[in-house]
Image (cartoon, rainbow, N blue to C red):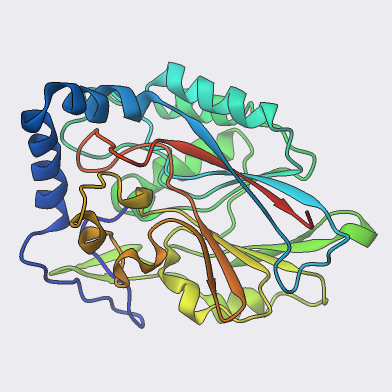
Length: 306
């Protein structure tokens, strides 16, 4: 998840709220803790270590009604103590495998990067857990902004070491002849910091979609959901993470500090615009502060052609 950035065309000027996203989340966590001990304990200890499976069943335009596909979505792992230690990651993997989906996708931000992290989880440890994921059509990954900002080489090496393929502005054709579909993965939209809240993405949506040579349906993976207004109707479904669903949902305030130039428009869940479909996962880990409130860690389970 990004702290303050928003994406434009090529260069992304950051929004300039009176309170930054970092200060908002830090202050919110403090407010929750001070306002009620029980609520603070829940937000800082209980909810981040929880896990829910959020199901979606849909047949969007562009997806054949007779072509059933199940997808497990794991977003924003942010491996690291205190809220995503190895034993919690093992719970995530066991729960994901129990869903027995046809396809598993990993939407980036694999490691925790914030000052409240008490200690890291070694790359070999979180990658070994991800290596236990099993799906007939494979486990596929894209990178997130934090992967680019903090340890790009390490994350690439860890995923390569357990043979999880990365899609970066690439599309692959999967499935049997009568059930084929394209899986397309974008490069990160906030990959390269330029200073003063500006970023240059390496995403290439036109180039990625140009690789699609048949009329089989298309699934698009994007770490940040802000690309969605540019996604053409030929894409049956876009999957994204990055926002953590707001992470700390303080009433009347949180929606103004979602890390997106669109505010709460693409913050979480199933979004339909102009018959185009987007599902944004609330993700698993945390950013800035190790606390969640009102949006527990989740695995998304999607059934297409339901």
